[in-house]
Amino acid sequence: MDELVALVVKKTGLSEEVARKAVATVIDFLKKKLPAPVAGQIDLVLGKGGGKEALAKGLANLTGKK
Image: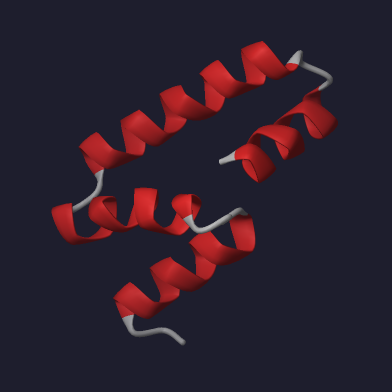
C-alpha cells in the first residue's frame, strides 16, 4: 500500500497523510463493490508490496486474462 500512497502523493501533491486516507477509502470501497473472490485478493496483492502493476496482474489472473 505504501507504493500506492507514494504514487498518489507524487501525482496529486497531497500530503502523505491525506493520500493514505484517500487510498484506504478507495480500497475499502472496492472491497465492498467487487465480487468476494476479487475483493479478497486486494489485501493479498497490496500486502505483498503491490502497486498498480501487482494489482493489475492479480486481477488479470482472477479473470483469466493473463
